[in-house]
Image (cartoon, rainbow, N blue to C red; front, side, top):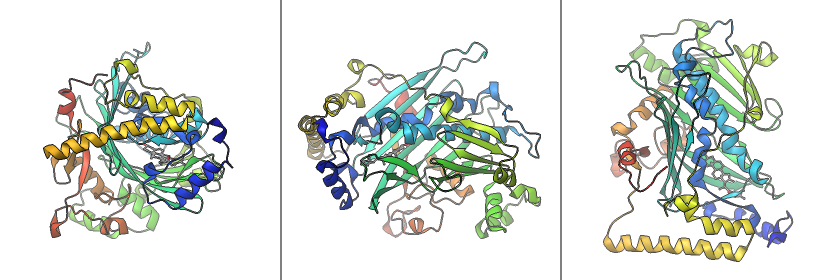
Length: 477
Ligand code: 0T9
C-alpha cells in the first residue's frame, strides 16, 4: 500500500539490509513498491538522443565550420576539431537525461524493470523542417534490444539517415554495496559514426565513448540519486582525444554533477600533459610511425578546457590557467535551458508483444497503483512465460536468437573501428569496466582473450546488424 513510502518504513529498512548482503544481482532484490519504476532499462537507450539537434549538428553541413564560441585563439578550427567540439557538447547534453531524468519525473532515482530476453524498445524523433534552415533532417530512429538476461545486457542503435550520423553501443552493469552507497561499474561503450557523404572515398569519422562508473547516494533516506565517478574518454578517429572527469559535491566547484573536460590534439598530448614526458607505450608507437611528431610544446597542452555542471551551465576556456581563474570563458552548454525532446513511441495497442511498454503494461499499472501483491502476480506471469520459452528451446536444442544485434568476435570486421580507436588511446578491448586501460588489473585478469589462446574464449562485443533491421517485417516505428 502507499503508506510504505517513508524512509523509516520497515520495508525500506529490510530492503537496505538485503542490499547490504546481496550477491551482485540487483534484479533479484524485492524492493518496496514506492521505489519501483514502471519503466524498463531497455528504454534508457533513448537518453542518448534527447537533444537530437546537437547529435545531428555533428555532421550537419549547415553547421560545418561554425562553432560559437569562436575564440580569437591559438587554435585553428579545422573541420575535425569543430566536429570534436560538437561531439563533446552533444555528449555533455546526454548526461542530464541519463542520470537525472528519473529524479525529475518521479522525485527520486527508481529501480527500473529488469528487461526480459528479446525485449524491444523502438521509437523515433520526427524532425520538423526548420524554417530558417533549408535542411530536411528526416527522422532519428532509436532501436533498443535486450540481448542477454543473465547477465542483463542492453544493445542499441540510434541513427539518422539524412545527416549520416549513427550511434551504437551496449550496456551492462556490475554493482557492489559499500558504506551505505551502491557502487555501479558500467561495461560496454558507445561508438559514434559520421559518414562523409560528399567525399565518398574518405573514411567515416568515428568516435569511441566510454561510460563512467557511478554510485547511488541517499539510500538511507530512501531518496536515492546517481552521482557519477571517474571519467569518460572520447577518442576520435581524427586523433583528437577528450577526457571528462566527474565529481560531486565538494570537488572542482563544490557543486553536484560537476565535470571538467580537456580536449587534446591526441592521446599522446594528454599523456605528455599529465606526466610531463611521453608515455612509454605512446613513444614506442611514435617511433614506429612518426610522421606527425609533436615538437611544439603548445600541442601538448589541452586545446580547450570545459568545466561546470553537466546538469546546468558549463563554460569553455582555451587554456587550463584561464579555466582556473575563470577568465575569458564562454558558455559551452546550459542544460537547464533546454528541455529534453522525447521520442515518439507507438501507442501500446499498436505495439508488438515483444515491445517493452506493451509487455510490461500490467506490471507498470500495478506499480503505479502501489499494489504490492498485484505487482508480484503480474511479474510472475511474465517470468513464467520466459521460463516456458527457455524450456521449449532446451527441448528443441536451440538457443535464443537476437534480433538486430550480434555478439561479434574482436577479430571480425564489425570490431575494426572499435579496435583501432581503442588502440589510439591505450584502452583495453576486452569485456572490462568501460574506460579500463591496457595493463590495468581488470585488463590483465579478464577471462576471455583477444586471440582465443590457452583455450580461453575470444572477446566479443555487441554490434548492430543493419541488414537485420532492413529486413525487419514485424516491428514498425
Ligand atoms: C544505462 C544508466 C544506467 C543504465 C542505469 C544503476 C541503475 C541501473 C543502470 C547505468 C544508462 O545509459 C545510464 C542510468 C542509471 C542507472 C541506474 C540507477 C539505479 O539506481 C539502477 C540500479 C539497478 C537500481 O535500481 C538500484 C536500486 C535502487 C534502490 C536505487 C533506486
